[in-house]
Length: 538
Image (cartoon, rainbow, N blue to C red; front, side, top):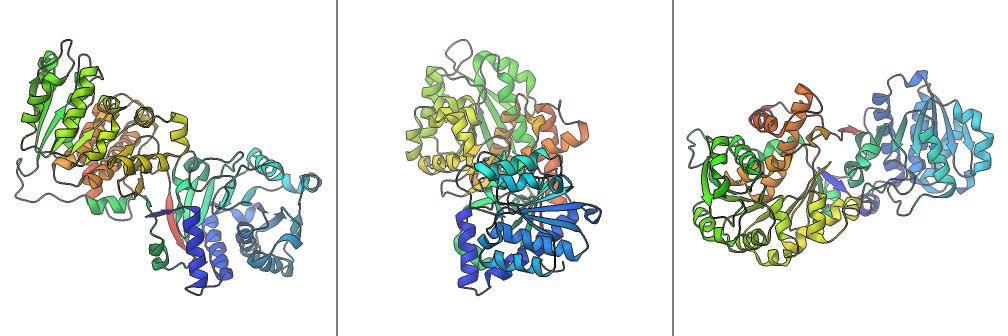
């Protein structure tokens, strides 16, 4: 499912009007009708409420005027509070404002703070707000009077229905531009915007409805958006059923190089997650000092002791053994619990350089690559990196705060620069590929804030690669399955307190639900709820 930037959406609107011949006023009418339908869904008792539409003078306000007209014609007690003088409203928005006046619908002009203060009683009387102040084109901090209005709406304690995007939210980054509406629900037009699906924008958006306003699919395809929202339907198409004559050899062989003293569990969990995902054969290679303890943790997986540097850490002494073990393997999972000593750094770089097998790098493997990522540009085999923001900071040299402010751009740029597949973990995990395409995940929940969850993700992704999935598909599927398994546990056992080991056990059932569910059922509680409403039938 496409996610579009503000510029891409503007181009789609422009091409629909100029090339396809649909007038802008028709698009605005379709937007308002579809948004009204969405609002009636979210607020079924709307006829018993006083509704205030707070509208700016631009097209976002114009959409709000259409909504107000439909509500008024359905007997809803609606008032429009115009944050400008009537004469300042132009174009299609002005045409729709004129229709409200012709219907004698209440329109109150409050172009400044003084006028707003004089209407305080009327404002306080509203029970539901429609936010039609600022649209997706916002690119500077909200200041002055608009900031004051947004703060008032947030402080009113009343539910807010936002038109297209919560006013004050950057539609490309999901970051609030100063003051931002905290919406109960939002209706956006044609396609969801990236800012709707990246935190904190996903939380500020509330429940999201995508309204079809009549933009032809070929117009969208022509823009070639490079951002996608991963949906259950999309993921189900990617997950294939196993052949009836499959055997452990055809299900692939994986090598896990991981672990150090005190962290043998990381190697074990990665191996077990890969097996639960369906990998046919898994070998966990760990420092010989901890090998005995690993054998008590793993029964189905094979183990292999690697020469270590003493005290249970790996270095270049293990290189030849690792490369020998890699022979005839379909994937290598590298790094969980491995430590990041000087020897481990040298070993990690050497393995990635020399491997002819796809590599999934996580945890200490990422820390070992920090400061030597330039060598990734010349690596010929596919590499998947799975950093959390702290590890991404060490890889890029950027601060965690800067990474979190623009997760999409940071992931995309690093993937393109290094030629790797980047999985930037966190709420709404971002998966970026070397060709510049970016996918945003919906599954997962706060209960995943527990040790070992990253090791499980590494095992799932590596397990999928081992079975023959291309790295880019395995990265997306792995992230989705990982989060969906956690969502299932959250529903069945509680929102917090489930462990990484519990998630491992939930992987097969999650995959079964994903590949076998009917189209309209929900596998998990997605954090961004996306329905698609047509403008027809309102």
